[in-house]
Image (cartoon, rainbow, N blue to C red; front, side):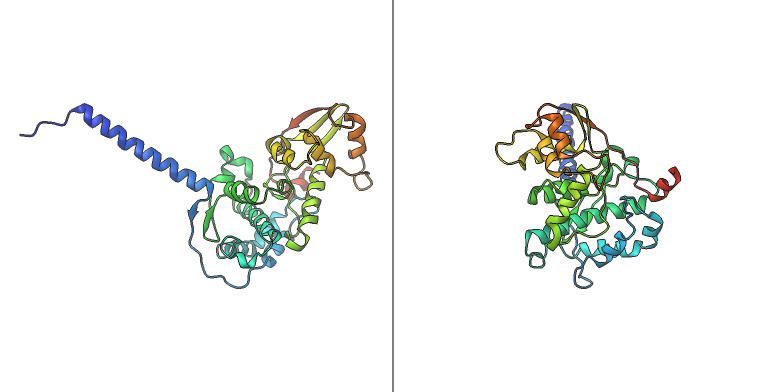
Length: 297
């Protein structure tokens, strides 16, 4: 008769097996969130283009709010564009995206289209209906042979490979208080101008930058991504995020009466912009729904 395995040995092996399972789960979760898992690559349905995406964006109002009724009618074109991302990307087909502008325009458009489709699918719920930011990391999409979360697309690719802080103002995050969705796709030949426009639009919005006496109220985006903005400053400009803000404020308020200008910031905060206190304010995370805007009027 065999002697029974000592209970201490069984407990040790159980602990080792449990630890191995936990490590495997943690590794899988990390690979999932970071977008390091492979995805099948279907054959391309035709030449890659932004035509379908442009049609979906025709439902963006000048205010940045979305006509979800129209978007839902045009859902097929948005889904068709998202499906085309599975077959083609700058990683998978670099010959189709020969310049950095080609690649960056693709990834910005991909990110914004995936946010848009997820909002259409969840409507009338928005980003704030998902717990712990799950909207951005809880789902993956096949993109050029990679299975990407929105988090992976932003952190690993858009910011990791391109490091242009203006991208923060071009990424639509599905909220009314975040950067607005443009009514046209980003195009490589106009990308620099489009990124500057997105930056000026965001900084020129009083919800994101507001001077009150000696206090500058800034959207939390400037705190969350502060290091990216500081890294973009020329040497010798110091470590003040207001230097970056100043670069995109308007010189006059002809188009936006009552806005804050570069001169206003200079007069209030001094030539080094170090005389003002910065207060960070939370953004409005509600859904940018044109229908809800109309109801409030």
